[in-house]
Amino acid sequence: MEDIWKNVESTLELLAVSQTKFVSEWDARTVDRALQWAQYCEHIYTRFHTNSVIRKALEKCLRDTNERLRITFEGYRDMPFSDTAQCRHILLITLLKNPATPNSVIKLLFKRHFEANGDTGQDDQNADVASLVRIRSACQVLGTAKFSRNVPGSLEFGAQVHGKMLRQRLDSLLSYPDNDVLARNLLDFVLQHSGGLDNVSYVIAGAVLSKNDISGGNVTEDLIVDWLRDHNDLLLNMCQSLPAGLLAELSERCTKFRLAYLEILKEWASHLEYDIIKELWQQPRDGGVSFKTLVNRFRSLLASSASVKADTEKELVDMKEADGGFEVMGLSVWTDLHQHSLKDLTQSQKGTSLT
Image (cartoon, rainbow, N blue to C red):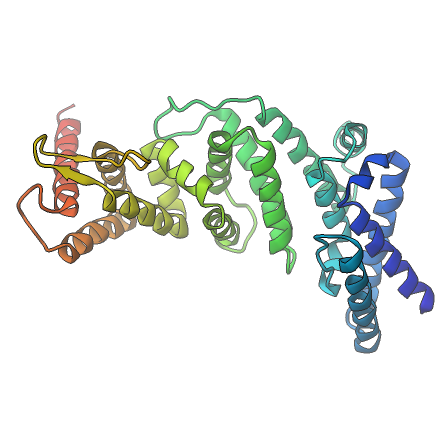
């Protein structure tokens, strides 16, 4: 068993090095050997994870090695025993995130695992490698692509394709236990390499709206929203830059997104100030959105599905009552938002019924 401990220790050392600038010296042969060692660790997990005695010994080996590597490598993240089941996933994501990874290695991985001439004989893990490399390639394309804002309430085809690609990868990762960190790492990579917040906003929207063919409810969508809450600048950008109709569609698809979106709308509304002379609600100079934009956003939500409409109207009524329950315009932003949103919605519905 001593050989197993040494091999596992060596694999952790290799994974630690893959996070550093020294990966710039790696070539195709080095990566192949690294993937083989990662696969070896997965085999060890599969073979011994139900053997309590050997598992306990392996966990001690990992603790000791992790402690040593934390001292040696700044920013090193511990590898728990459960993560050894997905060593190749971790290695690939680490290489994809590391700016020091040579382009020649990335291109070789793409050619070997993605451009397989239609070969369907690869195993599941190699398929995962292919999809990870595909994400890297897609992100390079996204770095130069600019998605249009002139398609109200819908996504461009390019954003749909890239969003679906990301969604499939996330669904695959989350079909394994304890893979939340890996999924978040993938989202971090997309954020860093997709050409700015506007592009990422459309890709994330595409991922949320992509059809989920894997059972498990809203696991992927919920993780995406939890991740967005940890990246508030991106969440704010989505709520500000995406078309109102598209945001309503996202709110209908994902309850967690709906709640996050409503929180941001309430935050923006709370910063509006009333100009008595102009008799208008003015947005602050340091950001936020206009009163007209807020009305447009709320109106789109009220025109959505029954559940979205009910939640939105409840928020408007609750905020109006909490702010004094005024019926006179100009005293409370919530009174004015409530009346304008319902008024504009009613007028819009009347106009639609006449056409």
